[in-house]
Image 1 (cartoon, rainbow, N blue to C red):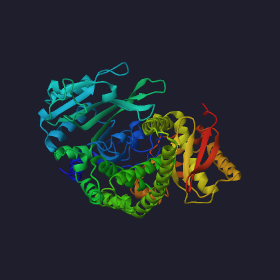
Image 2 (cartoon, rainbow, N blue to C red):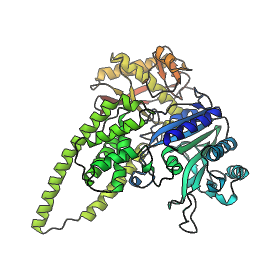
Image 3 (cartoon, rainbow, N blue to C red):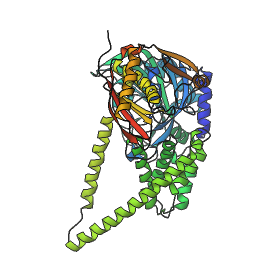
Image 4 (tube, rainbow, N blue to C red):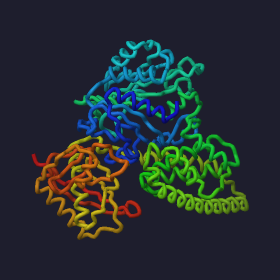
Length: 561
């Protein structure tokens, strides 16, 4: 079964179970500062997990495009990917464990055709934070899964979330297919890396919210979030030994082989994976840079170029050629790729040219140093350098993780107030700067402050900053009501709601109006009235990237009781 057919069958199955098909959200989380990219289907749905009504109802099905960099050093093996597609079905306060597991079992056995004897499952073993998930195990045995095929594992294996340091989370039950390989040892079980057990699906039962103090509080609304990796499952169904052997990779791999002078499977896979991920990131109109998503993009492109050099590929604009293949494969499912084709190819060409010059300069400098060292009889400690460089990479990675933890996912009163304030700031910018083309380019909200990125070509003057603050504070003082309405995306457009129209939104959206001042498409959550916000103050205005400005602001007093 090909990836396209798998998506289709999944959608058809869950539509028959009264699920509404929703579109994949952007790869860049709109209001979640816990991550740089959408790493799972749940990220765009956090407000709805926390209780906000979804415009499309309580039962949803989707395929979400995802980027994960946590396992980037594993890319090049048979299964790890930076960009991948995640199928998911959702219950927002509707069905829970019993129905979710039964539907998963039915899809695996009746639609995909896996025999019961091949299915192995894991469940949460329990700890001081939450009890053992005996209920899931009971449901599986009731469906015919043998007890010896059910394993209880700790939180690191069978617990999802929160995405940051606080927020929604809960136990999960994971489904594996026995590939028929021999066990690698007596402790071989699902989760072992030997390849005997192949994970295909994960049902997450979001029933807790982790607090700042580390407590796990039961949520009023229980949510089911499932995830089935398209590439891994398609590879399993096709009997392939690697995700790089299925049809969403084979044309890319063929193009790389055509140009390569050397044979190295790992380098070929890294190039295919990294340039595919880069193409999708570029489709979000993100340029390579030294900050945030742009920095990850630059790393992916440059690493793929380095590996192409290892294969002896010296062809000019090779990266953009691979991107053309990616666009051809995926544009039917993700039209934004074709819509932004020109931008994608041009940015890849520019980055490849820029990095080519850097490589040349670096090699010349290294040759000089080696020659000097040889002349002076000094030995160059290449191994020591590599070890120190790895330490530097680990420190940088940890720093990035700390930087992007915590935020809107906790839905605290502080983040609600700051989130609502971004709506006022967005409209105030457009009015004071007399630029109706200004739109939000990103936001990062923690309980302490908001960060708001917008398109503008120059630094704001002190006078402009003061006027923006004054206008926002006036609207706070006016105590404007914050009203939520659900409507068709075309109606939101007619209402002149702020938003980036196109592939980003589903057919129905939530629109928040702040009095008659601001109208914006948003998932929430927000306060009920601007009078709850306190005093708004801009603490910093700076450049974020070319043509993008960044404002940091705080609310300096608590809401009145």
